[in-house]
Length: 113
Image (cartoon, rainbow, N blue to C red):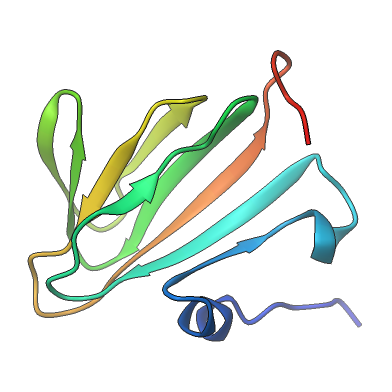
């Protein structure tokens, strides 16, 4: 039977975000981040890090993405791409949780674990 992972329960147990990665999958080729931003929460850091790239998609609720360009509202189903040492944060000004997933992988340049 195909192995499944309860990302929702893991995120709740790990402070709002969990990474499904090399420990569980046995590969460093890719990883998945599952995060929950609770109502009123600010400052959830999104930073792939050196040698990493991520496509981040809001899969529940709405949130505000804050970065060098200023704040930008995100709605359900919207995605964006981050690479390397760039840092953004997510804020939730709503009454319901916002949930995001990030599909990540390793860049050809600068990757080290």
